[in-house]
Length: 191
Image (cartoon, rainbow, N blue to C red; front, side, top):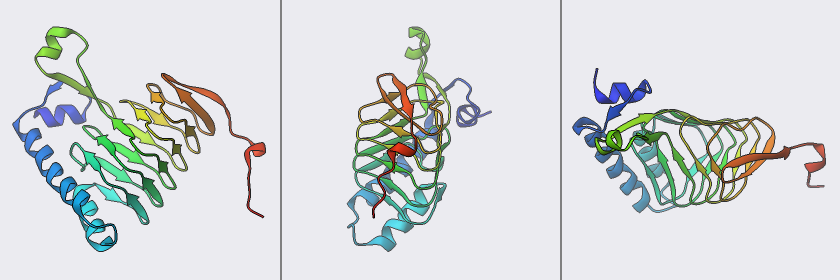
């Protein structure tokens, strides 16, 4: 079994030469994407389709955007990922429909070993991240490996999400915790 195959199964692994080549390929595409003019939507769409596993309709990813491999990222429809976002997709990252991600966001699917001598050997372990439909991240949100953000939830600016968050809540903090449920009193419909 290759080191990459181990990483995709959530097994301990070491970042090796084939994985480094995958990273460099993604870095080249990310760099080209970040240098492309905002109004060249055709080229931007083409680059995203080459970089990511799946990109839905009406997806806007603002520069500077960086990812580890790209081919582990699935993005639904009507998604905005704001400026300076990083997705370390060493494992699967699924972003649902109608998701808003604020600037300086980070989604991280990889952890280094906790024991120092294992960490010194470069041993890592990866877990997927799932962002369900209609989620909103404020600015500077960081989501760590193995987390699911439930449908319709809001993650407050500056939060570090270390554990999964249920659907339909407002959560914030470091570590991120549920503050309250979203209810009908939160409606601000335009009349």
